[in-house]
Image 1: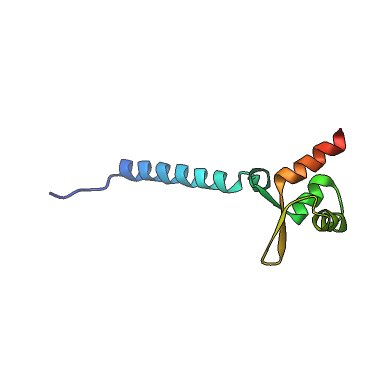
Image 2: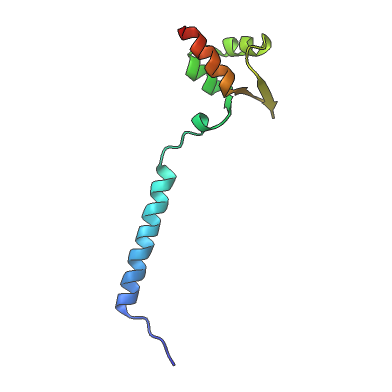
Length: 91
């Protein structure tokens, strides 16, 4: 038994592919807030969040006011500690 592809089959396939591509592109360009979701923040994110200089971030680290990790030359700071510092500034 032979199966034939009809124009309607091709049209449906084309619609399916267009929808799939549209969804993939929308997901790819959807803004993602990894910094807000992760437990650890890079130095740059801490500087932006607190509006402080790189030296001030280093002072937080050396004075042990925030927990940090060094991974492959980059420092990561604990989000919870940063939030505590930020909320203390408002009180």
